[in-house]
Each structure stands twice: as structure tokens, then as C-alpha cells.
Length: 161
Image 1 (cartoon, helix red, strand yellow):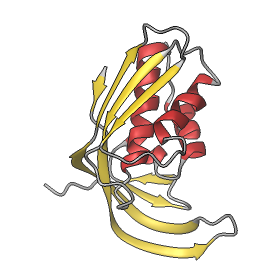
Image 2 (tube, helix red, strand yellow; image 1 turned 30 degrees about the vertical axis):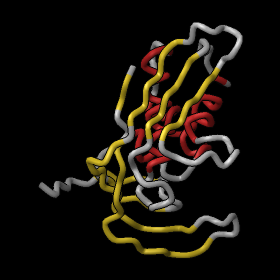
Image 3 (cartoon, rainbow, N blue to C red; image 1 turned 90 degrees about the vertical axis):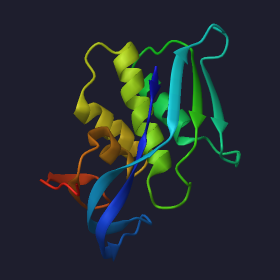
Image 4 (cartoon, one colour; image 1 turned 60 degrees about the horizontal axis):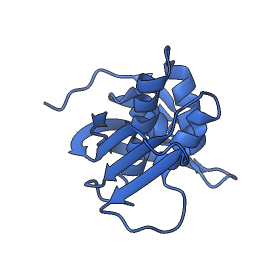
């Protein structure tokens, strides 16, 4: 399955306070934008390796990629057969556009669609929240007013078209 994780922008950003855990409480509007990575997930023919990830267009820093964290988070709850993932990065990394978080969220959604009969938004939201603050936004992937660390949403009616 091939999918296209999009980026996001913040329309206004009010940093309310710094938290002891290193995050900030904030108020902002998250808005999805048409800047995309390319994510392909296929069942693996190699049954010896449960998860294989190839990332194109991003340096390897030796840390687990958020796509891998998403796979691990979901596979702790569900039986996911061995998969191969190819991620082509087009969204600039470390630019505040949520590219890695979008990749993780789309990985959760694709794996849920491929291997889980009844995926549930709240469950994917909670797994995403354990991966990173922006991941739950991309599960929903529509304009929202975000509070807290950016994981508490209120729906808004906003179109920039």
C-alpha cells in the first residue's frame, strides 16, 4: 500500500508555559498542507525479519525512526506479519512541519487498514501520543485548535482555499 503523509503548519502559536517534562503547553491551530512524503508498506517475503525500513532522502542518525516506533507500538497490541517499508522523505526534517510525525501516523493508519479488522481512532491516537506530540494530529488530519502539548483537540471549521 502506498500513501502520502502530508505536512502541517501552525496558524499562530501561543506558548502558554514550559512543563517539567520538557514539553510546552501551547495553543495553536494545526492545519494540514499539501507537502508530502511517500510511504510504501508491503508484506515481506522474508519471514525472518519482522520489520525492515528503508529511508530515502534523510540521514541516518542511528536512532529508531518514528515509522519504526509506530510499527512497534501497534505490533505490541496486534499481530502484524513481517513487513517492508520504504519511506521517501520530501518534507524537510526538523523544520516544524511534522514530517516525521506524519510518517508515524500514516504508518499506524496503513497497518491498521492492512492488518486490523476494526481500527479505532482513539486507540491510534493514544499509540501516536506515546510516539510524539504531533502524531495524533495526523491521525485526525484536519484543521484543529490544539492545546496542552498539542494532543488535545477542538474541531474548527477553517479553510484557506
